[in-house]
Amino acid sequence: MTSGIDTEVQHTLETLVEFVNALADADTADDDVDVDTRALLEQHGFGRAAAAPEAAIRRTTARVRDLTPRVMSLPDSNVSAATDWINAELTELRVAPALSAHDGSELHIHWTPPSATFDDQVLADVLMSLAQELCDHGTERFGRCAATDCEHLFYDATRNGSRRFCSDPRCASRTHTADHRKRRKRRAAS
Ligand SMILES: [Zn+2]
Ligand SMILES: [Zn+2]
Image (spheres, protein in one colour):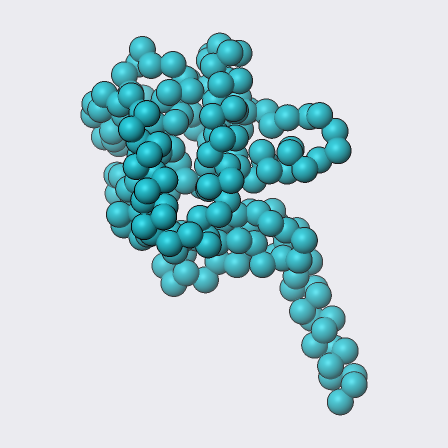
């Protein structure tokens, strides 16, 4: 049931969401530990992450960090504001699209040539996915975690738009526990 570009866009956006959540966490934490960009992107199937030079990894972190406030505010932004933002970002983007079916994957689009720096590749993937998403679904698939004290973003790929929590499993479980407790209290009081 997976079909080309939609899956690719969804996967890239889910990776972006994990990335900006981790950056936001790192920026509010007390220690100086930053996000392990290489590991995060490797885990999400960015094949070039493993061998990317340290400087390119640092630039990737910095460039995605610059996008983070706007990405985090997508659940509250309308399509026209998000479009203006993406269009401004796209004017800076160096793309040279080509079709590829490497390593047994389905045919998909690479927005940058193999000679592009790793950070240019990641930024192109991210921005083109956001551009495609705005065309297909506007901003409605982006939401904020419903758990108390969690500001994380999520990308809702469910058919009926029913997602409520970020990918941290604790958020869903502690909220269900709290709901349950509230219900019991209400029942005891009546
Ligand atoms: Zn590829
Ligand atoms: Zn959460």
